[in-house]
Length: 201
Image (cartoon, rainbow, N blue to C red; front, side):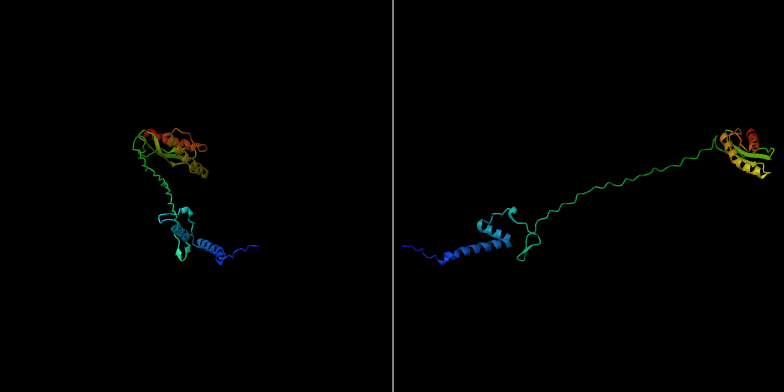
């Protein structure tokens, strides 16, 4: 005699499907509203003093809104700028230069009276100088008043020789200096006139 199983009630048949559907709905809700889901879970399973660790909360974009309400923005830490010290430019100041005082009139000052030397006759023409002496009796200035000029060649030679004779006379401070090569006659007359001034000053 075969035994028959009792018929399964409709509630037992429907209950697994209802349980699966409810779990699926809760999971979808948790995905759409994770913050609300966690808050509801805390309020259901714990006391008001219970706190969810911050590491369990999902990172939410500050611009995201849930159900029209803005989500709490994520805290952003602002790093202050690092001060940079710039060295001040170096300024160089030049010391004021004081002009050197002019030498006082003394033994080296050219303050003597200008004296004309005699006219010295040479083979090419007359030569005469004017000279000044210092208190130490040294020649400090000399000017050729006359030089041979009878020929163009003589004029050219003497125009070349006069500046050189002047420079050498001042450097020597006397009439004892070497004459100019090529103007030997003029050089001898120049030195003779100058020596007379030195002797009779």
